[in-house]
Amino acid sequence: MDIKFYLPTRVVAGPGCIVANAQLFARYGKRALVMTGARSAKGNGSLADVQRALDSQGIAYALFDKVESNPGIANCREAASHARLFKADFIVGIGGGSPLDAAKAAAVLARNELSDAEVFRNDYPGGALPVVAVPTTAGTGSEVTQYAILTNDAIESKSSISWEGIFPALAFLDSVYTASLPHRVAVNTALDALSHAIEGYLAVKADSWSRAVAYEALRVFGKALPRLADGYYGEDLRSELLLAANMAGAVIAQTATTIVHAMGYSLTYFKDIDHGRANGLLLAPYLDFVATASPDGVREVLAALGCRDLEAFADFLGSLLGERESISPDEIRKFTAIALKTKHVSNTARIPGEADIKELYARGLVSR
Ligand code: NAP
Ligand code: FE
Image (cartoon, rainbow, N blue to C red):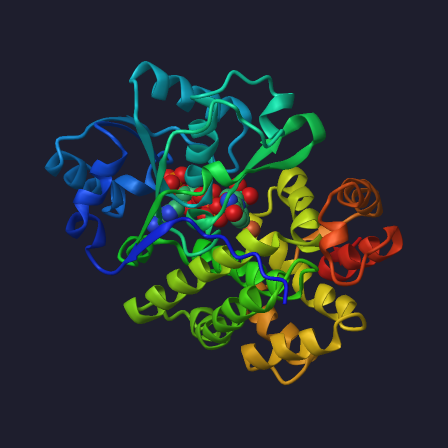
């Protein structure tokens, strides 16, 4: 038995959990920088709940509401300089994966002088400010991971900070906040979480602990995603999705992701396809590809999802994806060269070569 499960985040879930557990914030200090995207946190009640909780504890706060989607290093540096100026003791990130990842990166940058190249060195002598995470999408699971994934123009892709010091100290899950998600964002973020559970289940680094958690997340997605595809988005479904996305995040914190994520980054960077959708487009060909190396694993994934076979799985995804984007031979060449250089390749159950990655792109998108 070889198990290395590590998950240092305190997770508190349920309706009204932020205000009801406001005293938990006080553990991290007296001054907080609150980080959000431009709009959604103001409309869905999450920012108001955090402000109420901080007020109740006498914690002073400043708001940085300029986190971009797929944030880059400059955006995180700007937040970090606000944290320093305000002398923040901790950071509260509210939003989808973008504000949560930006909060983690800013937590590092506030404590360390780093050149752009040093941002991804995963060793930060200055430590990091504690982070409290409030997800408002049911997708990335970033509230329980040690990753901050940033747009990195130097390599024309995304790069990860992967460091135990940025596991959020505390995460609040309240599905009231996801009620305002547009259907497209709800679907795309759910596809990200599904991708985490599937990739995590089949990753080279998977173990029996991570597979057990991934299996449970897959079981929930198997029932929940067809309902989401049909347009249902009630509170019961939202809380199931939020918890399953959280479990899938806990999985990739152990297993990391695989070739699907590495390939998806180029679809986001060059073609502006949402992160979760980018993964979703590639999932069916990927599952088919790894089936020869991990037939039992793929069978178990399909069983957990309630899919009879790979064809049923492709149909299941098809109803969530709709019309697919196209991809040119030049794009396939360029994106394949980028994906081949990533560490995700060696974490994939069947190690893909250049021809394999090209074929996965061609099968996932519409070739032109
Ligand atoms: P996102 O980029 O955080 O947000 C997408 C959009 O949804 C934004 O326009 C945002 O608006 C809006 N939004 C968020 N919550 C909303 C709500 N409750 N109601 C209405 N609109 C809402 O999307 P995401 O898919 O959650 O995160 C993607 C990022 O996470 C990518 O950078 C990806 O690489 C990263 N990621 C990280 C991990 C990890 O482990 N750290 C794992 C997978 C992916 P506002 O801007 O106004 O808030
Ligand atoms: Fe992801």
